[in-house]
Amino acid sequence: MSCAHDLDPMVALFRSLGDPTRLAILHRLAHGEARVVDLTGELDMAQSTVSKHLACLRDCGLVDFRVVGRQSFYALTRPELMDLLRSAEAVLAATGNAVALCPVYGGPVGQAVAVVKS
Image (tube, rainbow, N blue to C red; front, side):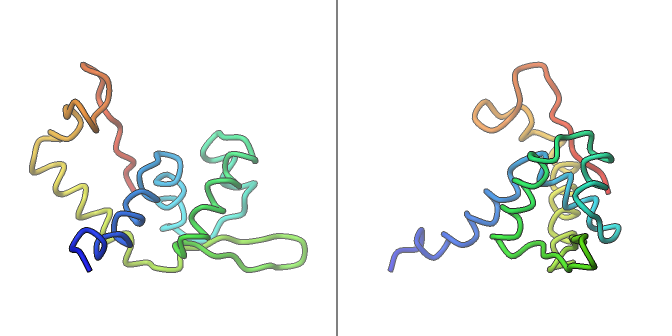
């Protein structure tokens, strides 16, 4: 078994976190449960967009929901995920957000990449 193969689950985790909408949803859910309608209003996004990203996060095991009547309340399944995101923010601060300037992974030249704060 190669070392690269052993990293596949971690690569999948970071890919799941590699979308601004999913990060915004996770940051919001760090403050407590939310319904899709709450998230659409708070994030100013279409219901279909929010639902698609919630499905991805559910498939990855990062969020789940509970049903109350006709409503579904979404929550983080792994609160320690926020520790990972805070660590990422610390790395970005320590490197002067150098990754934002990276020609492969950063934003367009001269455009800052927004980091969602909790």
